[in-house]
Image 1 (cartoon, rainbow, N blue to C red):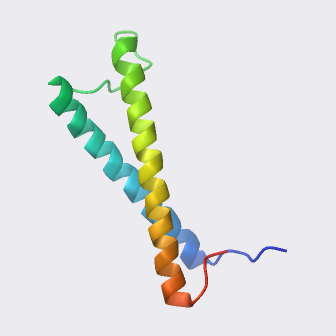
Image 2: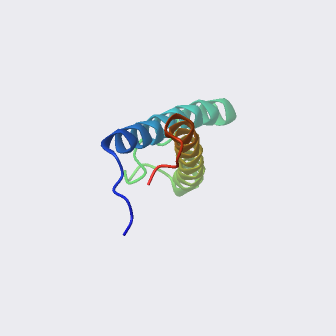
Amino acid sequence: MAAKPSIGWRLFGTASAVLAGMAARRLMVRGWRLATGGNPPSNPAAPGTQWREAVPFALATGAAMGLARMLATRKAAGYYRRSTGHLPP
């Protein structure tokens, strides 16, 4: 039977992943503005949004956010291990 994660780890791990995702999104918006000179599509489902803008932005943002969340969770787990002597459950 697996150990139940502590409330501290759940909060710490979740907070680090959420903050990393938010930071990645901001960086992607800035990068899009630098690369294209315009704002990224704010609502890909809107009828006025063109596919050639929505698809690349969604792919790049999804990949960047996933990578940032993974890296943040790994760092948080490392910090947890150094603090408690074992990996989070």
